[in-house]
Image 1: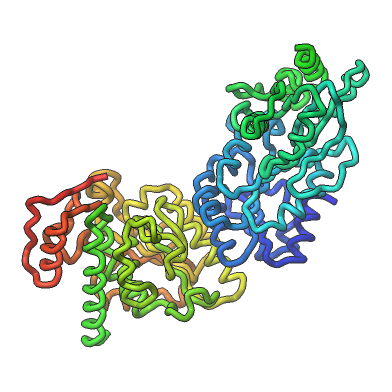
Image 2: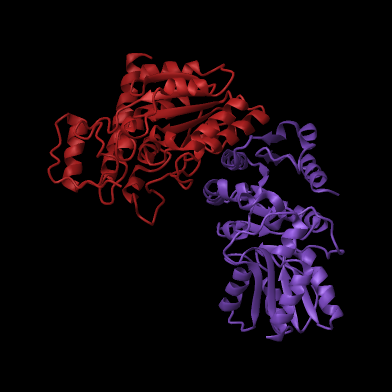
Length: 299
Length: 284
């Protein structure tokens, strides 16, 4: 099952669904033929697309809207916050090439503040599936809610067989007393590789696929806090406002004291290039992660 | 339109203005913009829209979106006169106990959508118009915009899309009162020639006197049967009905004392000029 096939099936089964794009057809290229006038391409107009999506939702529809992450979240932000968010309408945002997946595009296309921005809208749900399998596992429940949602789309192949998705719950992949890696979206890929390398070195490392940034699975964090020595968040996002911030907010609010470290972009854009080279350059490849995590554990 | 009907509409509009003026005190409201839109909104709600107390949630109703937002006192007054809300409720203006404040919200029966951020509702209107067309509906969508609002690029982006999708059930109405917040539109970001601008975006465009009920009736009868979205530019006067504040750049947001409100009501109803020596003007 692909994203496009799932969306087609969902829309054919439920005529509330409208597929919209601001002329970003990469994920939905074949849908005009099967959905007819329920496929709407507004051209390069992210703002108008989000406003029109709000109007369609007012009439009972569930628009699934597509654009490149940077423009979907930032160009259209006020339309999402004000027309979709204030009215709490079920508009479903599908965000293409978030985080490092913008690889060679450069800072104009780097959505590494998207989680921070979108979770600031009251009522907005925020998700980051780890790969295509995880995406297909999660989307039916994400699209089933009557809330607006934002999804970091990731169609890369899975490195492992995922557990069934329970709405709002994270996926605990490994347990480990030396530390627990918390990550989401694309960065699970490198984290799985890093986990293997650390295991080979004799470390007992936990690994969690966060899946939901909002709602956040605090119950799992509370449980793990007594089973692991420290948390390490890994994310292709600014340090500000992403998973590290969400975790810190949760720990402080619940008076949980545990060493916590972060690997994220600290107040700067990343160097554009081929994805594999970007990861090495930014210290986000498995080998670099292992070095950083070893340092954290030994602190 | 016969004389009797015109008089009825004029009397209705005057009662609406009588609801609006007291809101320009004890916190104030956007009085000038509210008064310029009263006549065109009166025509639409009383004589044109398929909208009445019994069908406010019916999917086949006509939709009116007030995109400029800050003229919502005109809606409050009209809805009170139509019996959609109790007139007494207008005394709750700016009370946190009610939902009657400076911009529209859906807690007020008859308000289709919240607004206040300019340039938002043209696209929301497009979404509603698209859905009506997909479902094969006969209802129409109207989006009232301010002339100052046309500074926002999102208005023009929306026009491109409305034209592309040939939304023949969608009418954009411009309350052309010639002022934006603090100054005349043409002194800041000139808008003219507006007719040519809208026509070049593919809109069937009409320009009328927005206080003339005959002209309103004629223009709104012309929009039927068009092959795409339309624009009606309504030339209006900011502060219409109160000569002492009409067409003045410094009468956008007004917060008068109670004695001044009484003077303004006398001016509105009896034609005597108000004495605004002690006026408390707020320009935002």
